[in-house]
Amino acid sequence: MQDRDAAVGPGSRPAPDEDAGTAGRPQAADGTGPNLAEHLTRAARSSPDQPALYFSDRTITWSELDGTVTGVARALAQVVPGADGRPARVAVALPNSPDFVVGLLGALRAGLTAVPVNPALTARELRQVLADSAASVLIGTERVRDLVADVELPALRAVHTTPPVADGGTPTFPVRAADDLAVLLYTSGTEGQPKGAMLSHGALAANHEQVGRIAPPVVGPDDVVLLALPLFHAYGLNAGLGAVLHHGATGVLVDDPGADAALAEIARHRATVLIGVPSMVQSWARADADVLAGSMAAVRVVVCGAAPLDPADAARFTEATGRPVQIGYGLTETAPVLTSTLVGGEPKPGSIGRPLPGVELRLVGADGTELWRDGLPAPDDDAEEWDLSDPVAGTDPGQIVVRGANLFSGYWPHGTGGPDPDGWWATGDVAYADADGDLFLVDRLGELILVNGFNVYPHEVESVLCAHPAVAESAVVGVPHPRTGETVRAYVVPAAGHRATGAELIAHCARNLARFKCPTDVEFVELLPRSVIGKVRKTLLRPTGTTEETDA
Image 1 (cartoon, rainbow, N blue to C red):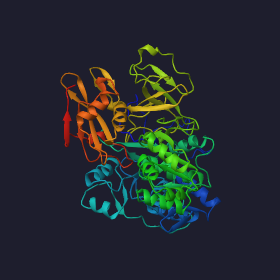
Image 2: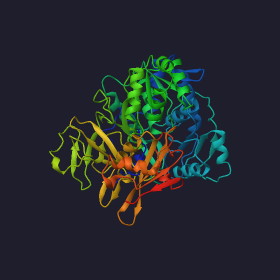
Image 3: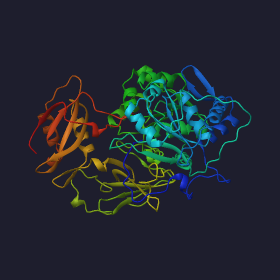
Image 4: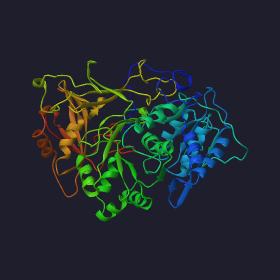
């Protein structure tokens, strides 16, 4: 799912600890919330000897995992809440491992708030997250502990590689309601300062209920799910690990992001559900045919999200394996899934599918006009006003605005930037719907380029550039221009064995795009900066390489 920093929805909501409303949230009869740690207990009672996790050569059963989590929860329960009076925050900065799972679930079982953190952060980034969240405990790698060893963080009371397992009798832990804060997830900062998205227990559970209404089921208790995505990210955390816990399935923990390691574990444990990102699908599609066929023998569902997947890569994978790649779209703030091609059945090239059951979705124009709403026919637009880049049938592009029980409660610490009083939240992403109601992501609203007042969507330009045989990857941004306001700059990673000049690529764009959409300069770079889940971080792009420029 796609990770976003900025909230553009009007209004704000109180923080989950202060919000008494529970409308639309899954909730037990006694008012307790659907804590992920409660799903662990349920699985341990119903299937104590069944494998919960595979990790390297280890097999961890549900009863073993449940007992270890309870011991860690006892230790963490001794942590005194901070001065703000809210449950203490527990930062978990570990790679994909049983320790991460135990630390996360131990915090939730103890009634505390988990703050998953990328263990590869720099010292500055790590200190920023710890200070902003006012974490009381850090469960981290030795590297992480060394980075903060000399830092004075008044709220940080203990630092452990893994928390101690406390002995004792039958423990009693605080009961948390559905609207209580479960996890604090810091966005990747692709558009500025990272902010903590507050996800309640109810929001996490709601997304599983929504995905669970897809037929046939995406994940069930008999499935073996690949957990190769970073668990500190919303996509790996809830769509991956959360789904395993919710359904009592089995997870295959993989800490090596390379295609070979993942394929080996998929084959070894006969994984049935793969949750990945475009770079993983691309690598799998280009693996040895026999290795790929053997690894995919038991696979029944392949889901890809976080960034656009090249339709050519999806087609190669399907041709090699006989299995379609289902596309999903979502954000950290939506826990994370909003749409999926699984809702409509067969995926369309380039489509992000349709909204999940229980998710309301609208497309809204720049003037606030509603262009489309899920379940309603597209408006009867005047085709003569469209240019050739518009969809042949369906809607004009509009911002995606959503409502559902899976939405976050705003940004830490005061709940600002969350859904408006009616529950709607504007994602900042732009899409259009075709005549069948399938959605196609156009671009990020903040990345829209205005050339002489005309809209240029970077994704359209990038698609044209990547169709050239000399281009392996591209990223397009808007830069100031004294005459046109903005102009289009392209960053290009050359394809191996091919050579093209900037002028040739600009001419290629001119044959396929209106003049105002064409890049006026091309910069060749060795690679594009990316987030941990593969999204290009355009804010880090700076003119540093070889640039070839033409007049606008």
